[in-house]
Length: 328
Image (cartoon, rainbow, N blue to C red; front, side, top):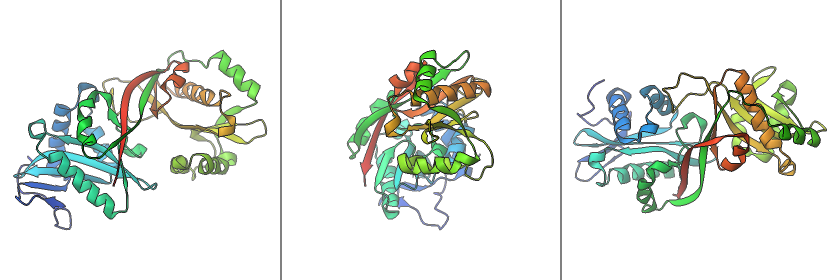
């Protein structure tokens, strides 16, 4: 790749997004040809070792992100940030990275300011730390190891929210606890994969109980027959009381040195009237068994505030995150 130091690159329409009056700082659109290699190097040099990822992973995330901006001084990139937004009208700061040699000199502030102006123009008024969609998922907030960065956000009007975690479960030898099977049998609930008959009812269930997840379940509405991604809990009368999304071939954002197949569990939800009966844990356990059968050695439970609850199945915390938002 070409060394990115040189003439500032404008947006496709030729207009720079933002420039200081001095002309020394320019915030512009990310240019893969000029910036890709620099960004990969900056990421590895700046992030804690456990968050080291390949250029392939970073590029995959960037390809799904709505807006990626680079800050330049005198033609050389010194910082980069990315935001994404969804149909809910909220945006997520996927990442914000400034070269350590340039930190404390207003680079991050300029990038955030440019993002905020763009979001306001789109009538988006909530900006959160982390991803707002699975396509751009690196983390759902700010990793606990990066706590030193929090004052930067706090001083710029961000408010802290309840934290969350990513969990991990080794699947070798995993079996659903006997007490959980008994609880499920007593409740009259059965678990099965979504099929053509239940697909419309699953969509209606999500729209009623978990509308923020509806789009993820609609992604497979065109399929015929069994939907291998959706696990359904049905009550004694056939009514849907819970659902879960699972994936047996998730992109390995982290732990890329392990040559294993990795699965994931997401968007587990149980109707309010059916909680406290073991339905949710039974869905999670069944999904782990299915992923094990499909060849997964590990299962990640992403973006949850229920670490101790999932811990009843043997999961452990892989990473903790600070959650925060800013009203624009």
